[in-house]
Amino acid sequence: MRGVSLAGAEFAVDPFGKGNLPGTAGVHYHYPDPAFSKGYSSADYFLAKGMNTFRVPFRWERLQPVRNQPLNAAELNRLKTTVDNLVAKGAYVVLDVHNYARYGTGVLGAEVPVADFAEFWGRLAVEFKGNTKVVFALMNEPHDMPTEVWIEAANAAIVSIRNTGATNLIIVPGNGWSGAHSFNATFYGTSNAEALLKIVDPKQYVAFEVHQHLDGDSSGKAATCVSETVGVERLQVFTEWLRKHKKKGFLGEFSGGSGAVCLKAITNVVVYLEQNKDVYVGWTYWAAGPAWGSYFTSLEPKDGVDTPQMISLQAHLSASVKASVK
Image (tube, rainbow, N blue to C red; front, side, top):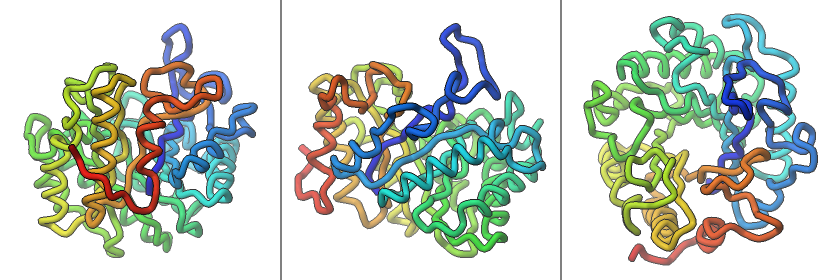
C-alpha cells in the first residue's frame, strides 16, 4: 500500500481558532469526496500518479455522538460514500479514528471506558466488514496515558471487530504519539517495543503503525529536515523489531518540507520501505485533502503543478523500486 492521508474530516478548528466538535460538515470539517467538498477530485490525481491507498481520518465524536448508541446516520453516510467511491476506483482505504485515544477531552481508560471504544469499533466493523480493501486503523497517536491501558483498549477493540466476523487487516499504533524514533523509549511509560508484543488477534492479521516526520522534534511542524537520512535512521529500531518478532509494520504518517534536504529524506524513506517490504505492508504520506490550502507538507497540486514532494514520491510508486539509499 502506497498513498496519502486525505485529511479534512477530522478537522475541528474554525478560522478563529475555536474548537468545533461536532461542528458542521462542509464548514468546520471536510470529507475528501466531491459529494461533500464540491469539485474535489484529487483522488483521481493521486491514483494517476501511481498511488493505491488513501488513509481517511475522521472523528469518533461525530460518528457516534453518544457512546454506546447507534452511529449518526448522516455522518456514516459521509464516511461510507467517501470510502465506497475510493474503493470503486480500485484503491485501498485505511479508516483512521483520529482521536489520540480521546473522546472529546476524556482519556480512553480513564474518563472514557475501554468497553465504549470496543463497542464503537464493533459498530464500525459491521459497516465495512464485507470490503477487504478497507483497513481498520484503530486509533491515531495515543498519548499521555499508560501504555498498558492502550494495549488493553486495542485488544478489546480487536475482539469486538473479530466478533462481527470481519476479516479485514487491523492496524495497531503505539503509545507516545506512535513515533518510530521513540519505539524503544520509556518516557511515555512501558515502551511500545515491549507492550505491543501483547497484542492478540485470533486472525493473526494485524500490522503495527508508526509515524515519523523528518523535522527536529519529529512533530511535522517544521519545514526543515534534520538530514537526508533522518527518516531511515529513525525507522531502523522499529524495522529490527518487526523482523525479530515476525511482525508487519505500516508507516501511517511521514512528511517534510520542499527544501532539497527534505526531498532527499522523503525519497530515502520510501526507498528504505521498499527495501524492507518483507516487514512493511505500506505507507501513507501526510497529507492531502480538500482544505489544506498551501500548507507546507501538502501534496495537493498548486494551479495544476505537482508539489516538489509529489515529484520525489512519484519516482518510487512503481511496483518495484530498485534504487538504493544514498
